[in-house]
Length: 179
Image: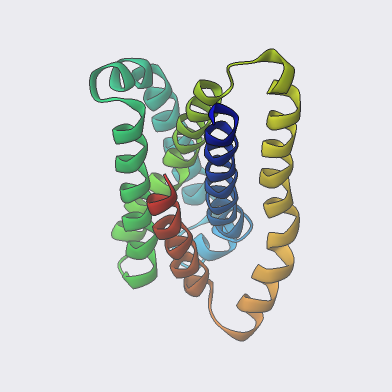
């Protein structure tokens, strides 16, 4: 019974890892090409820098946030904010709004990966299964990054960059319910 529960839990974490990495991999390959439609190259660099700085702040704050609110609530809130920012980029024509939403989608994915990794770590009680489970987890994440350029390239060829952000928001929707 305990092994079945563990297997079911790990399967859900694998599903969450797939949706999480698909959402991120879809956007990571097009972000800079999309942003240069609204900003200069130096402004795009600045947006990436600001997003990275906020990521560092999130990582510093994350242990106390997880202690205070729990990993699940922090993760679900971050997923909601990420989906909102992705949908915001899809809907917005305003460069200030796009910059704000981009900073969010640049800053939040590492926090999402951290939260999911905490769930995985909590699930693994035995050192005997850690290597197998973690290697499958990382394989799923990397598979999404391997597959995404092919899919994204086809979509961008027929539609706009903004459609990718809408699809990524959809992956966040599924991620939210899996988590």
